[in-house]
Length: 69
Image 1 (cartoon, rainbow, N blue to C red):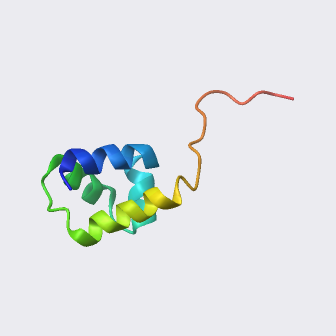
Image 2 (image 1 turned 180 degrees about the vertical axis):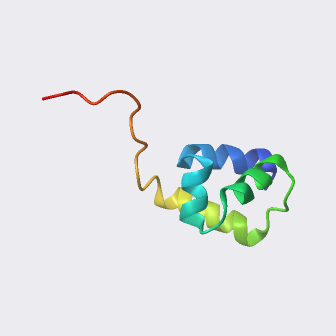
């Protein structure tokens, strides 16, 4: 898996921080893999694919002000 493929897959799953938390790694590890600064091991690739198969677990919070009711 290339760094670009890793990044594209991660972007479908959420932010670097969200994916890192779900993988049990630091956000900087995800960033390093996406830049090609860290080898993407078979284990790391399979872990990302497992998340992709499971889908997004938590939708991103919407930005903006809360409505008063």
